[in-house]
Structure formats: C-alpha cells, structure tokens
Length: 137
Image 1: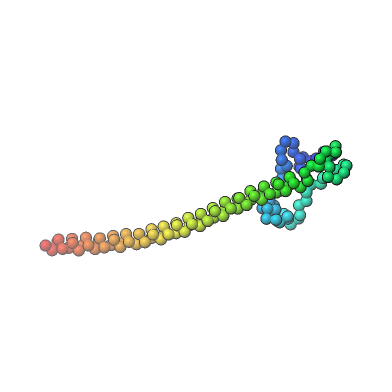
Image 2: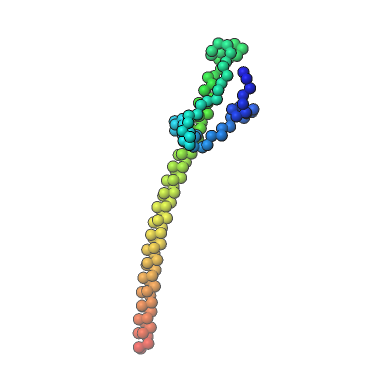
C-alpha cells in the first residue's frame, strides 16, 4: 500500500473533516449533497488490494469491509444529530411555554395596574368626601 495523504489519515487520531456543519446535517438526513455547492461528495480513493478478494494481506482471515467503519461513524454522527435535534425541540417547546407564561403574567400585571389605579382614584374621592364632611361639622 502507498502512503496516505495527511488529509485522510492522521496518526493516532481519527480523520478530521473540514466540511461545514450543513453538510453533516444534510448527510444525517440522507442527502448526500453539499447544500452550498450541490456537488456530491465521494469517498477517498483506495489503493487496489493485492491477492484474492476477501482475504487479508498475508493470507489471514478477511478483514472487515472498508465501509463498516465509515457506516459506523455515519450512524454515530446521525445519532448525535438526532439527539441534538431532540434537545433543540425540547428547548423550543420550553421557550414557547415560557413565552406563554410571560404573556399571561404581563396580562395579570396590566389588570393589577388598572385595579390599583381605580383603587387610588376611589380612595382620593373618599378622602375628599370625608374631609368636606369634617369641615362642615
């Protein structure tokens, strides 16, 4: 096998992709195209294997299919995206409920303000009434 480029192979670490988050979200939903360029992404070129198909080099038992790791990573990414989407749905629901509660609280505060104004004007009228009544006596 020939040497791999640094883009696709990093020693002691998983490959790091430079694709934007939109591409991952599109890939998680089953869309294989990059939304910004509408071009299809392809897997990196693999060098041809030597020997019989389905056997590992050196005549050992066959290794896992090359797409297994890729599929596993894709499934993990899809699961993470689904988890984030679920969390965001819960957060949006909480924000909507909070907005509803704040709206109700604002209505109650307005009603309380109207009641307080009425009480204040009634108290002032009553005070004047009894002040005049005390003056006449």
